Image 1 (cartoon, rainbow, N blue to C red):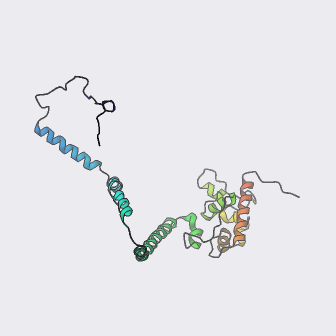
Image 2: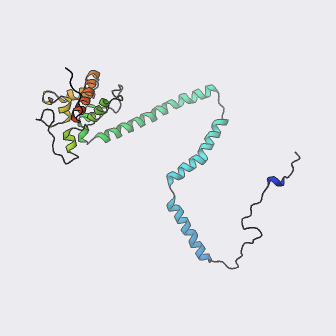
Length: 234
């Protein structure tokens, strides 16, 4: 190939300085016993400072990922073989998905059990997912989510976290301002818990008209309680 050496493209790095020799020592600083103890101490520090998760992650990135990438790149299969493998793997994928779904459902049930604020939600809600979407970007949807979770900032709810003991409804001035009192417009004594679940959208058959009316009612209630109620038109 007729390669030639070019001194302009080469360089030498001098670590000890120009024409400087490293000092030589005739005697060792530490004896064999001290060196052995130092090595044992270093080994103990490495064992205690190791993280199994970090080691597994590093090993996976450094060894397994390159192997899989190379194997997938060089392995060639016919379309029939690939289809047969996918068909044989589908039952295992379904089993894994079912196990994940079951585990998530159990975690969801364990998370909402024992919480008094989720009493109505826990009684009527039997699954963590819903086929119908009831939320949008409106303020009423945010208030509806708080109401479904039992965290609507009513006077009774705020009294649990503040020193203000006032819980009477500002609108009627007679009864405590609870979630049911707000949803049923100060007439909760004439309604049942099932009707509350319908207005909150917790039933199996969703009544969208009732849910939308609840959103508008909660928006109006928030404006009235914050002192920014719109004037009533004649």
